[in-house]
Structures are given as structure tokens and as C-alpha cells.
Length: 113
Image 1 (tube, helix red, strand yellow):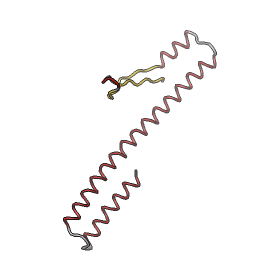
Image 2 (cartoon, rainbow, N blue to C red):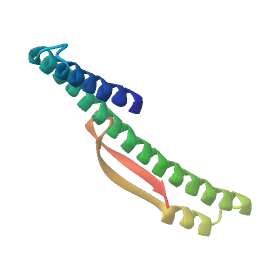
Image 3 (cartoon, helix red, strand yellow):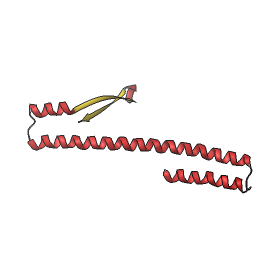
Image 4 (cartoon, rainbow, N blue to C red):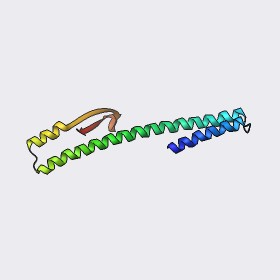
């Protein structure tokens, strides 16, 4: 994605050089650079969304690792006692998100903290 953005920026700079050297006049320059700028903006938005998704995935990964560690502790004890059940229940956090899930219901985030 960053490579595409860099190529688009180079393309816009190329149009500017062609205009400065007189290879193209202003009207084609404005059309070409306008199209390229719109594409560049779209690519930058996509990159921003991907970076946010990557951050979210990293956060979720950390929570999953923590959850697995808690479960490993309980499994190592080889007994599911009331204390262990209480420990699990205390560590479960359910949050309603802004996202809409299936059947137009809000999505829920379930974490073990």
C-alpha cells in the first residue's frame, strides 16, 4: 500500500515536471493531477484503515494470549472448583461496541482480563 502511495506521489510530481518543461499544458495537467490526487487520497484512507485494523488485531491478540494463560493456570490445577469458576467469571468483561452485527444488533466484545 505504501508503495502504491509513493508511486502515485511520483506520478503527480512527474506531471508537475512535464508542465514546467512545457510537455503538457495546464488543462491536461489539472485533469491528470486531479485524478491522481483523488486516487492518492483514497489510498491514504485505505492505509489508515488498515493501520487501525492492525492495531486492533494486535490488541485482540494480546487479550487472547492473556486469556489462554488464565485457562492454562486453571487446567494445570486439574480441577474446576468454585474458586476457579469465580476467577473466570471475574475476569470476563463484556462490552457493547459501536459496530452493528448480525440482525442489526450491536456487536459485543468479550474479553478475559
